[in-house]
Image (cartoon, rainbow, N blue to C red; front, top):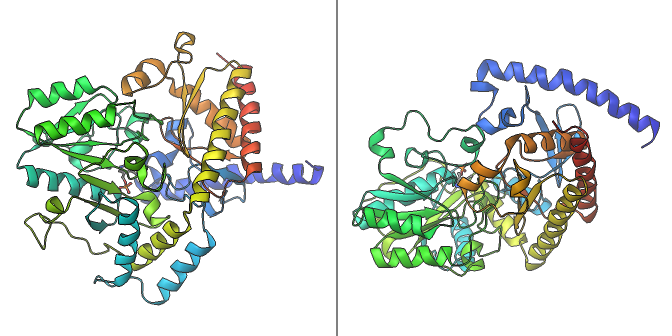
Length: 453
Ligand SMILES: *Cc1c(COP(=O)(O)O)cnc(C)c1O
């Protein structure tokens, strides 16, 4: 670094302290905790105030002081092409000129749906909604109506948005803040949510058996992405499929993260297991607010106006979001997935090697461009796989991640500001971005080593 650059960086650092703090105290006057989604507060990584973001472009995220970081949050996975991808930006601008919202049917919605269905043939009919929360909430309502049963089975540490039925031992921000359940969810609702252990078919069968004739659906993140990254073990998803078939239970894949991420056809194509219903979000809007649920025609036909299950939305199928979705899916060519795979593989092994060199006990788990870092709380767990939320509770340390996050931030790398979230690689990350990140991880682990308690 030239002395001028060093000088400039120093100045930026100084300004950063003043500005983000100031912006945060302003935001706290208006927003609960100064933010509009809890993890954004950086509380989970021991910060007094979060970064305030002014701009993102490609793989770069810039804060209000002009500090630039390599972005591995990618709007929580939505920006798979990187931010402001030119063709997506163009599509959005063009759509905006024709009107921001119609609240009426458009042909472009069918263009998006056609692409989704082509990649995920299990989605025979679908509904566009505005958030993943809406998609999962509507999917279980539908499952209950179709099966005429009330209970649902979910997995501990899986996150399906913030509707009442799912705020029972959920992942994401709830995992970081150690909130097993949310206040304000009536027992009468929570008692209909049964919680099983991920990657443990016996735990599911047992619950299904104990509640025979009462379980409407099993909902699962086929690759868990809200308790770090946990792949399904061989036979797990197949086992769920079989259990559902045998007990007239619907299988719902929450592919809000994995859809068009782990493969174009989502986890259902990667693992070759077909759900009855699928929930999508994040990638299908390429950074705009759109989500979807859909699946078997005989089930979907129960949704209003064809059937008795009510579900609606003022901004559903918003034309700007639809335009962003179409442009994103069109840009997701085979070559994009192979680039994502190559870079992600390199990043995962690079971070893992850096940790080994510094003798920091970290496990990197990866499926495609989703990476999870697990810091073991004890040497004796070293190398063992993290298979479910019990493993996280028993074997992992949040503090390790928190320190790593802060060191990486100092090195210009922006990781998720929360221990058990997914690190996302985008197609905008270049080979040199990956090298830079691996180098930063070396520096960070070395600092942690010199600094261990
Ligand atoms: C993000 C997420 C949701 C919720 O989506 P929102 O758009 O934030 O409401 C649901 N399920 C999974 C698996 C998610 O990762």
